[in-house]
Length: 260
Image 1 (cartoon, one colour):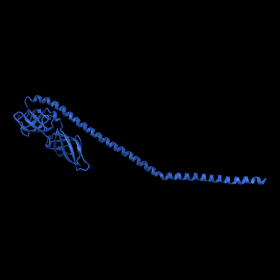
Image 2: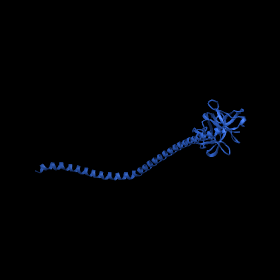
Image 3: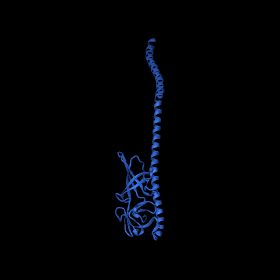
């Protein structure tokens, strides 16, 4: 009978040993992995925190840049609206003044220093930004007399005088140079006419100028000459080219004032 049980005990003995070894390995593995898991988390946590800080910083920077971009865009739109409103105001003033001029034209002279004149011909009927008015030497108009809009902006000067007519050359005539002041920071400039009521001038790159900025005459009581329309700057240039526009549509001028 003993011989029958011996093989079974020998078979069971290695089997149980293997199970025991596996159990020990399993328990040890759980312990080791749980230890490493906590250690890894401890080591990696600063990196996770740094990553979160960087992500927040980048997100905040993006939001800030987007806000700045929106503010710049809104500022441009507002300046354009202001410029548009100024043009509309000038137009309304022009219509009101023109009604008064029609009455004053009967006597011609508005006051001791100013003569009202109707525009007989203007561009494109006349070339080179020239207008012809119906007041001449008989109305005390002289060569070089200043010509302005009823609303105030100066247009040009008398180029040629006849008894009852005069030719006026606008400041915007191609190649015509006019001393002026950029209202922003009172910067002196030289306006160069480019025709069609347009101008250009050059500024050092570090001088700030924006669309809608006003350009005034260099006098004690300055008058509007033009309005900045566009600023062109190349990354390699030391200067910036600025384009400007007459404050009125020179193709639709009806009345002017002449200062003899």
